[in-house]
Image (cartoon, rainbow, N blue to C red; front, side):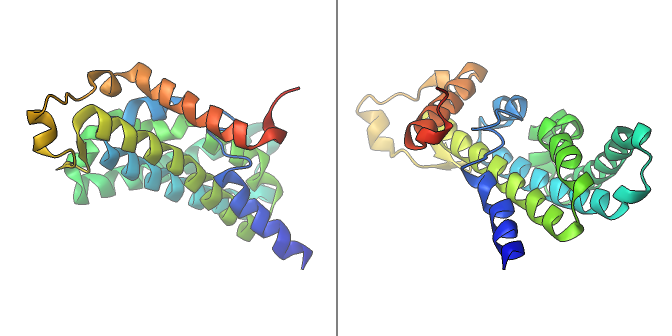
Length: 208
């Protein structure tokens, strides 16, 4: 029973209580880069979930055979291999999104969330908990991407997933899209608002 409770915490804690972006403040660079539109934010989130989950499992399976002095290199090789696979799949099946994400898919390799989970969790735990940890942290990261992408595209372009959401009559009445929302600094401001709201609702996360 205890193991089930632990697995449940491992999976669900990254959604809110230990979110990698909002609580640990990791992976901020990609939040700035890929959230101008909702679609690339969704694709980047799903890509990180896949890479993080599979890399956690692979490292967990081979952790006892990895020499300590080269463990970071091994982790990077595993992540790099998975990122190449994801990049090729995106180019084959979602080429337009792949072009929008550009180099940022490749930069998943250096995402501190991945390296942190591999080093802190997968290297010390069995494959099933490692899989749950990878998926949980990936979803926690993706949730923030989606929220930021949602507001930036909606307020900055009046669209969601490329479809017009703000009625034309609003524009005829004088409504104007907020051009600041599509600029990189607004990603930081939106993330800061998310962190503020999250911490105001979770008093235990506030520093004394």
